[in-house]
Image (tube, rainbow, N blue to C red; front, side):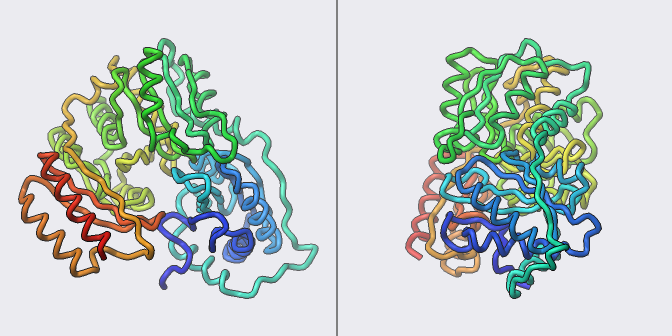
Amino acid sequence: MTRQYFGTDGVRGKVGEYPITADFALRLGWATGKALAGAGNKKVLIGKDTRISGYMFESALEAGLIAAGVDAVLLGPMPTPGIAYLTQTFRACAGIVISASHNPYFDNGIKFFSDDGSKLDDEIELQIEYWLNQTMSTVATDQLGKARRLNDARGRYIEFCKSSVPRNLSLKGLKIVLDCANGATYNIAPAVFEELGAKVITTAASPDGININYQCGSTHPEKLRDIVLEQQADLGIAFDGDGDRVVMIDRFGHIIDGDQIIYILASQLKKQGLLEGGVVGTLMSNLGLEQALSQLDIPFLRSDVGDRHVMAMLKENNWQLGGESSGHIICREVTSTGDGIIAALQVLVNLVRANLELHQALEGLEIMPQVLINVSVAKRMQPMKNQIIKQAVKVEENLLKNRGRVLLRASGTEPLIRIMVEGVEMSEISASAERLAEIVRNI
C-alpha cells in the first residue's frame, strides 16, 4: 500500500496546513488508539519539544486516544530518544513525539515509537492510515481512556543518560559548552553533564516557543564555536530541537559532524576490542569515512537516508554502531534510537579512557570535500525518475570519473531536492553541484 500521510519519520509539515492541524491530530490520536486496540497494555506516552504548537497537538492527540479507549501519559518537553526510553520502561504500547526536529518553529510533526522504543513497523503505520480513513467514533463512556502527567519524566531520563557512563569514570576537569537549540534538551543536557563532573556553560537553553533551532543548535553551530573559543573550553556540544542529533566543536573551533563522531567511536572501540561487527552509514556518509574505516579493517555498509534505515541494517547484521552525517548517531548497545546526549557521552567516555582531546581522536580520518545544495520544489518528486535529471547526473558522473560521486534525492521531511556532490577538488564538485541545481530548478 502507498502511504497517504506518513513520510520517512511520521507526519510533518507547516502548522495550520493539512495535515499538521488540530483536527487531523485528533483523528490521528484516535486512529493510533484503534490500531493498537489489541494491545494488552492500552497506554500511550506523549512527549514534545518546545515549539508553541506542541500544546495544541498534545491536547488533540490526548483527546483522540481517550476517545478510542486508550490511556495517555503526558511527558511534557522531552528529547525524542527520552520518549523512546520511557516508552520501553513504562511498558507502554507506543510513544508519540510531537516535534519537527531541526525545522523552524512554524513546522511541526508527529512521529511514533513502538513498545520496544524503536520506530513503528510499516504494518502498524498502514493500520493507522486505514483507521484515519474511517468514520471516527467514541467508545462507551465506561471504556474511555484516562490521562495523567508524568511529573518525574525528566529525572528518569537524566538518570538513564548518566547510567551509560561507567561509575568509575568522571568528566571532572572538562570545560564544556552546550548548545541546546532552545529545544527539548534545555533542562536535561546541562544536568547530565554537570552531575557527571564537567564544568558546563550553556547557550540556547531558554525556549520561548518560537526560538527553537533559530540560529543555534546542530544546524547552526557557529555561535557555539565562538563561545568555545571565547571561553577557552575543551569542547562544545550542539543538539537539535528534539535532541536526537549532535555535532561537536573542538577547542580550536573545528566543527565535528556525524561522520567524524562515528569515526571516533568506531576507531576507539576497535582499539579496545569492544566494537561488535562493523558500522552502518548512509548514502550521504562521506567517502573519507568509508576509506578510513577500511584502513582499520572495520566493515562499512550504506543504508538509505534516515535513522530508521540505519537501525534496520544494524539489526539485520547484529552490529552496534551507525549513523548519519547530520549527527543522528545510534549506539545500539545503549539505546534503541538515535540519541544526541548518549552519543556525546560515548565520545567523552572514549576520549577520557584514551587520554585524548577531540581533535587527536580524528587522526587517520581525511574527510573528502562535499557540496550540498537544497532546491525547493512546489511538489514532491523523485528526481532520479525524471529522465532529464537522470541524464544530467550521468554526465556529471562521467566528468568526475573516479574522483568523486553524485547523489540526488528527495527530502523525506521537507519539499526539497537534496543535491550532494563529493570529490577531491572543491572547485570541480562545486561547479558540478551548481549545474545540477540549475537543471532541477528549471524543471
